[in-house]
Length: 370
Image (cartoon, helix red, strand yellow):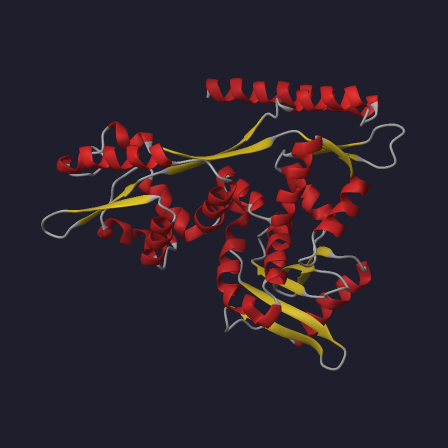
């Protein structure tokens, strides 16, 4: 678990200046801040460095000379700083998007919590963090249209398209490669590396099937069983998948560690407030706020008996996963027909997709045996 978070900038008049820190009682010396500044100056490039300064294990992210900020994460000595690089890149963009009028300052505790859980995110949370990021979504949507693009062209296009603040293209692409959404490959005769879409993201609401099989066994009083079924059926009769709805759930529910803990419990049981209170041991400090978020996103239903006891049930669950982009075969055929991509590029893309398909099938077989 990280120790704390510091947001610093360099000012010629006052040297290093702390803009925010969490927790407030966190202490970091001016000498340490100068060492961090000097280490970034030595590399001269935006991005993350890791260093040990006395008893401190530090991961520091520099946003570049255009808008220079240093986002410093203090870690325990046994933690691997490199596992936080993607998370630091992620929150750096959140800070820039909320930099005007110091709006980001109120977000620091939440950002620290989000960053602390980053190396331990499951696949669902990891995909949520990825797709809720504007730049990641721009890249994925562009590749959904074309399938493949040169890295140099992608960089130029992103700089022209995204004007909300700093971003490190190489760090972003590296995270997408790690998550097996894209692949980077060189092809002879091309001016730069090629970026291929190898897996797409599939997101949709779905009924809470585990609970619906036998709500009474999961904690719902028998007299509410039929009403529960009706409520779920009524929701899905009107439900139409929408990008805006998906993004709201990803950002407010799946990517929020506290709300996600409540969702995980509601996926397997119908619970009372007393049971929910036990989640405080897992770091859920504001249960009422988490329930309100789920309610506002139409994800829970509440039943109340004659004694005033409330039973919290999942009205709709959410599914997100990587899927093989079979539709890309039609895109490749179309590009071949109109000669919009070089044949060597399209052949390489077919090879990449074939390799990915075989790998996916192999993983599925192994998972079935387990």
